[in-house]
Length: 231
Length: 336
View 1 (cartoon, rainbow over the protein chains, first blue to last red):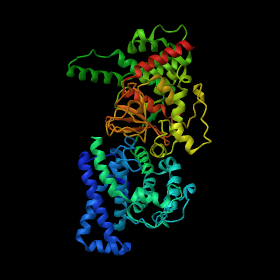
View 2: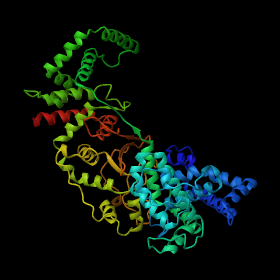
View 3: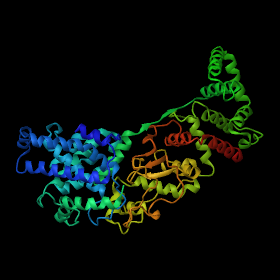
């Protein structure tokens, strides 16, 4: 968790700036690695998955690759990809920032899944900010909430973000990582309507299904998109 | 995704910002400092003096200063108090006689204080790019410069900055993506979408109307005086200069061209490319876009609005303090 927090807060860009085609190749590789790891855990509970991971050299190697790339993806997501321009290039889907973001949250989710040091499962909002009762909108662990609850939590945190950041930026970052990790979970699985119970009436399950889970299509469009965009 | 990216940016900007130091001189300390400046000015060396001669001279000057009797300093301090024309003459030498003009027949107490503050503001100690300490004197100079002519005309900018501070992280970007065909790049659309009962605050008409907790008033007035400082939204493509963008995109591009349309960026006015101000719901930050350094104001500033510390730093880093001192002195001269 602290590692992810540092990555989010850091403004140091150690890596060489990648070209768009390099970026596209790396994104594809990372996405394949994440899918492999997710396939490996399918049908298993977390403890068994971790146990199996320790036993499997191949899985551990892939996990290390995902972890190594996490910082550069987070930097891409927050600072290096353009969030405003070409928002409508791929109509109703994503721009380069969204794609980097989806990979970032999926990476966080996979890392939290396999890394016992994260200890995220038991964290509730009130564990992080016990005195800020205005944001205690859910008593559940953040990593176990349904989609509607998740939207409610994020909207609430968004409203009080300025207060939380001034109060304790490390804790605020911790909270953000948890929310991103949970969103990574929604992006990584084909989930039932019971979990993806969207309250925003934007098409409910189908909205999430269409916009989040179909990353392969988006990635192929992304390659074309960044070629058009240029450096 | 939009919300996450904006929340992370706000967090990172706040966390990585360097807090400026604030120093308050009382009357006695001010005079002591000014006396020192006067002494230095008398013994100043001409340019292009050999380094060894200069260092030798500096040693002599240090010895002279250390043996300078307290009585002499007290006498100099008293003469600054009794004869403010001395301050005027000193500043005329530093700022240029044609800029300062003739001294008024009577120098009021407020003008005397401003002259003292100007001496401190343009001193070699406080007018260097490497010094991040802002004194109350420097703030008083800017405040006086803004006081008379720049508050009322800044009403539009005041409303714009207020709207920027009304928007939560991600709301503008979400609006731009969800309602792309309705988005004209105006923040009021975003604000009223989320809060239809929003009421804009009345624009200030004088310096006392500035709320101490809000940054919009002083920044808006400052932008009337120094229009080359650009305000960037923290959810724009490149708020802190990592991508070396020169223009800020305020509305998504609907065309398939890779170059942003001029109409979608802020106006074609020439802005300072090295420095910018980032305003979000948290606060306002001064950004050195060239070196990716972010500065924030101290939590509290005695007797003044804390945002002035950033404005002083901007002027100092861009070597504009001399001009502002001249403007402040002349503004006070004609208004009293």
